[in-house]
Length: 323
Image 1 (cartoon, rainbow, N blue to C red):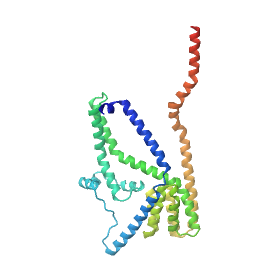
Image 2 (image 1 turned 90 degrees about the vertical axis):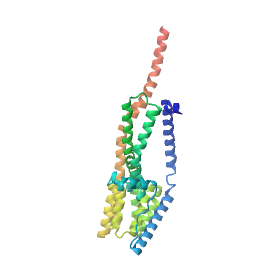
Image 3 (image 1 turned 135 degrees about the vertical axis):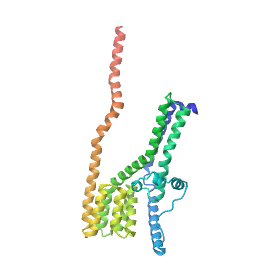
Image 4 (image 1 turned 120 degrees about the vertical axis):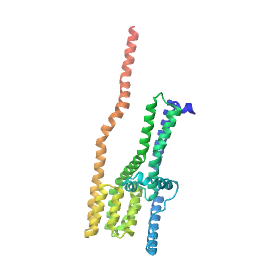
């Protein structure tokens, strides 16, 4: 086992196998992207009913609480070491909401892994470089690698969270203009805004599960919050996108001043379609620059081999005949 793990060729083969498995898994998971829609929608509906029940219980007893209970090993570690103060980040709660993680438990998990990942990375790199194979590196170089692993481990949870936020926002914005069109049709058909949002959340799930979840939460907040403006502002904060923020502002103004909601939705739908089109054009414009390096590394050598190999063979044959 030690010889296998210390052989660079075996490590390279293992890395290629992991990359191939991740690629196949990603392709297969994308084919069944809507499989978990019903489960997530039911979870959001159950959460809405739970909030209503707790709200009624709190009003009845005047001492109730709407906070979820968070118990377990990670919670005890975070509380014992006071990690919420040691690793305090004023924006982490907002980022967790934007990533789709709600409640106190994901926040506790984030602090726990942000504290433990540097030690885990340090232990793995130390065990590998100082026990299995040192690759002939000096001691100070190995110590530097261990410190670098600790730094990577400290920022790994933030990188994962940022990546999750970016993917979720992209998924939402790809389907948001279509959702606005559906919402406009429902409102102009005479449905109330709560019923229209609930209907759109059910129909848009095939395009974006994340957007369907956000609209379901918006429908729940419109039902139990005292002011609809708070529900629209909550949607804008959870998505953190200029297009959705402008839509929330327009719907708030229409609610406040009594302007026609259909006109505002029609204008916002056109603006968000333009934003989606401009984002696609931006990616298309950046594609030639991104393809430069792969073309130099992969296409040009093969092209040179295809063009020059027959000429080299002819020259060798000519020189052999002449000799």
